[in-house]
Image (cartoon, rainbow, N blue to C red; front, side):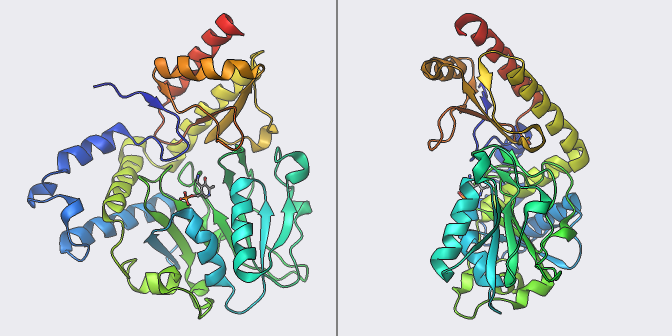
Length: 367
Ligand code: PMP
């Protein structure tokens, strides 16, 4: 068996030790005589798995007690709708920082559902190559909350600070963050946020699961006309089990949290590894004559590293040779082309070293 290096943006690489553990437990979960996939979500042994996963996530992110953690479904995309439904109950306008394609989709959904959305700052003029500075952010007087995308997965643009969500009159509103492609990449001050959500299929586990972290005072702001499955309060009251949750994805997420705690040593250790991986890949790109990345240094994503080749006729051979060398999924998003190497938590440092060596060799032969 050979496991190649997988640079996919999502569904992304999972730690080999997690997959091995899942394999060991696949047919007979710890002597129970059945697979986790076959358990009732109401069974005691499944509830123990679900609760342990939440406890481990809380420990990793030091989630304060006044936050609820939801394990729900519908992808991060469903949260583009669920957030306004949950937070616009008392009226007001959804405010956004617009820094790329995922933010644009969130804005589009709020507009589609509620007719308006205020863009409090945008990086469009720079071609999304630098996030707005704090002084550029101007919320509307009626802002109900401020939403931003911590890391734009396609553009490879990451915030280097946590924005303030303050209306012109100085009053604070909840800060909402789509953290799909950067959650768990390092320590986080959860107390700065009203809502954090993340699709699982990058740093959490397999697809089919979304984690929502919501401050409990925000549970009462929902619109009454919302589908019940969207509701943070209803989900929280039901332990994320209004209906059947994505039981196996939740279990695997729990194994990933254990891997982060036990094998990696927590998020500070993960942060240091991620910093090293990204630094060396960007250094290789900047030091070459063939590869280029357009993002300003302070906003370069640590998780998703897009780059172009000086001659796009080399794209196809680059991808084909990379794949032959066991370096998978380096093609950029279909909307932008070029290349992208996603360096999520489960992509080991050796994978980045192998990619850098391949890129140097390719440049020497073909550049
Ligand atoms: N937000 C971000 C930042 C993403 O990277 C993605 C997926 N790549 C999404 C939202 C959409 O996620 P999903 O496919 O889970 O709906």
